[in-house]
Length: 225
Image (cartoon, rainbow, N blue to C red; front, side):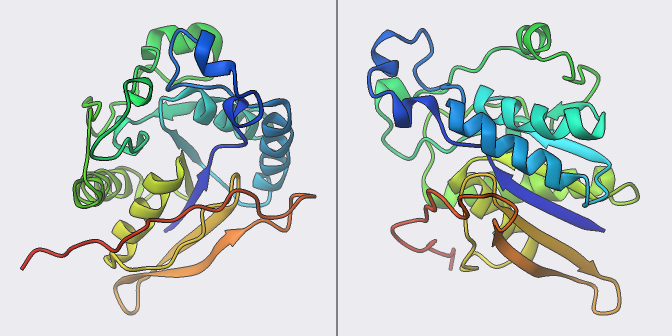
């Protein structure tokens, strides 16, 4: 089996600093015009990956990025709250997650699959780095179990969540993963050695601007004794 991880494209509030001041849901910015462009580049490249399923965070920037992939491949988008954004342990009021419901998203993005059952329906209000890694480990294991005989799959998420998902796949909370927007990390299951392996991380050579907006954690995960 093969799993690809990617991050949404460039956000509108990164370009338009006034966007949040008038937004009804300030934690849920859409893609910027450039974000849509690089999502399209990812969508075109995704035709070489043999993807069978698209799993996405419910945040609109991820749904829009997923739609760019889905339109190229004629695939539905499966929303999973287990791969939603990380808000940290002390979020600001504007960071509190308030995504549209799946039904509301379906009206805007017809490729949403309302029959898919998310690994969780919980929306975190705050999370430590350790809690994020625990949450994503549970979800990615369940996602892999769902699609173990029907891959490859791609998960469209956020920087911190994507890194934690990759670490969960590898069972290594120190794995150094790249997180540039719309970049790809590829994980393959080695049946001979019965373990997951990282083939590459941060692949971005299919985009004209290369890697952009890489992010990583400021401290390591504290392992339980």
